[in-house]
Amino acid sequence: MLQAGQNGSLTITLHKTSDYEFKQPGSGYAYEAAASGQTGTTYYTLSGSTFYFYQGVKVAGSGSFLGQATKQEMADYIVKKGQLAEFKQLAKKVEIVDKSGQTQRLSEGRSGYFTIPAEMQGTWYSASNYDGETTHSKYVFGQSTIFIQDDKHNRKGHTTTLYTRAANYKAPDYPSEEQIKKAEGWGLPKIVQYKGINYLNVMGWYQGAGDGEYFAVHTENIDGNDVQVLICAGGAGIWVDGIAYRSQAMAEKMQDHQFDDLNYSDSDN
Image: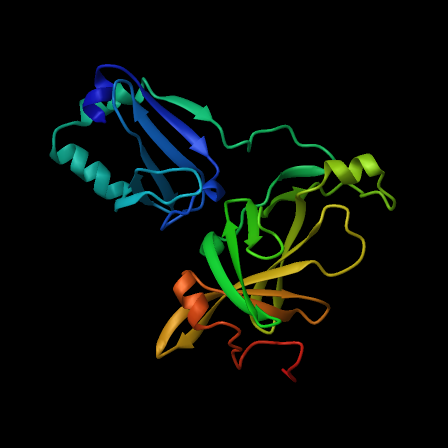
């Protein structure tokens, strides 16, 4: 890519991470890098100071994971290879194209995008038995979006974009139909702690009643191993109504399993 870019240009296109299923979704955009005259593109994500690289990426797919490197490792490599001058020249040619939709004008009290905790970002899977049939669900957390889909009642899935609310904004007691329609898919988030667990609570932008949805990343011991799970909960008691895992296989294996340290509606915890 360096060689191709030197003779032409380099374009970095910003995408929403929720459009993909990367091994490491990172905490920002999904970055697509393409040099003029080069066939194929490279994608990367960034978490802290570590980059994760992919090729063969398609929308709603994961692509082939190439590897990872920190900023310092890459800087050291550039110097070692004597390519610092070439990189400085290439940097002057870089064009940034934003296709993430995250720079749209905000309104209706939205002051910005809420950043979902990095440990929660990425794809989670769950499997639950209802009336003798298994329902498979998928949760994809982007930087500021939540996509939820299941194979029984919500095949197309639904995306909620999380926004912060301006401190001086007072939501109407009785929003108009136009306001309600406009705010479809907008989520009002906050972090709440319950029994030592930090939950992401999401309510509708104009929601006046109810408790919304709760999500939390928690560590459980499964077959002697510490495994991160996604807790899905709701109600006034923040009752657990589902557990999701990083793989479909684990979700199948742990279908409807209840963990002793969590708060279920049918328990005394």
